[in-house]
Length: 506
Image 1: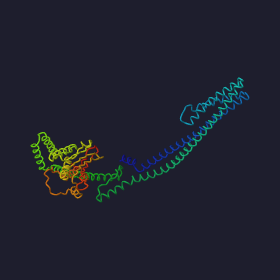
Image 2: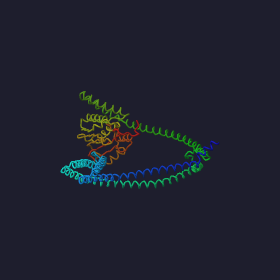
Image 3: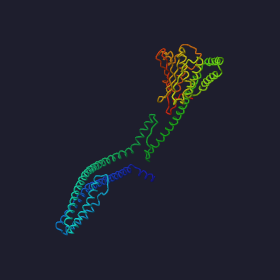
Image 4: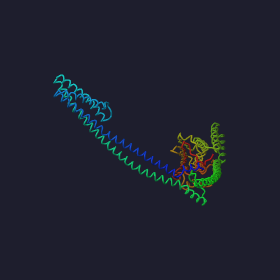
């Protein structure tokens, strides 16, 4: 019990308040130390801003002292003037040693380099002047002094420029430092305001920590009383009476949530059953697709075989063999491709065989041309979609115009799709006829003995099932006796293959 009492004392609201006060005081102390350090560094930088100008002024004054002491020595030959000269010369040499002596991309540094170089030359001239004076070589020390005086003038000019340049730059730096001082002042104000806000938030936080569990418990109890068991609130770790009651209520809520989870699992199982049902419906659509592909008119097979027999009786065996081979390829493709897709070149090959068979039957009256892009031949497409379109062009378009009949097949890639067109120069179609075919309305009753039985409505139905789109089949005609053009659009997926909808099955 005593241990629990000590634990409660350590975790009491009073202890938390004292801890928060200590943290706030530590934060205030640290922020004050930080601001003091920043202000101190800023003051040092301000001192450094103008120390460079002071250095240049001291350098100029020392140079002037050298010039004056040399002049005094030349005029009076005073030993005190000579001593002053040597003292100022040593001092000046120490100063110019601090100047830049390298070529750098800085105007100030290059001015320092020029001043240093000219100063070294100037000191040599002054030293030679003093030596010539001591040797009583009047003409020489006069000439050397004049040269030195000219260098003195140049050095003063360079120092003046350096001083102005540094003053301008230091002025800009000084303005920046003043802005920093203003920022630090604003930071001080913000720190004071921030500490006040933190203290306020701390008071609110402690109050909420004390009152919050009771408030949350009352709200949760009201929701449970209203029949709403989906209640959530933070875990309470306090070991007081409120914590005990709240934790007990948590356990009750957890039991309710466990029950809800069981219900969710049950609903997921039910959703899986519905998904299986949808899968069965998809397979049913696939079965419908296969059924549509299997509709082939046996009359066409018999008529073609009769034509082969007549050709065998009338001509050589080689042409008969070629004809029968084409027939075998044609029917083999029909049988094999009922249960699978095909490459586009296979679809085009069956059209070639079909046109060859018809030209054997009709003495080669159909002019057949094609234009196929090489990059589309190996694309996978639904089987038996081209031959029925060509068959329709022959049966309903050019059958009555065989003397100049023409079929043109074209397949090209257009961005994200393949465009296939079948064009004939037959009797054409009216808009009402086009609308009737596109809507699937039956035409005039006419038994087609030379048909495979796969009509345009079959092709349109299979395209809709395969791609789950309605805009893939188009018919265009300028009117009667103006020919007809049928267009099939096959969507391409991201990898360049034809897009297959989820409902295509297979």
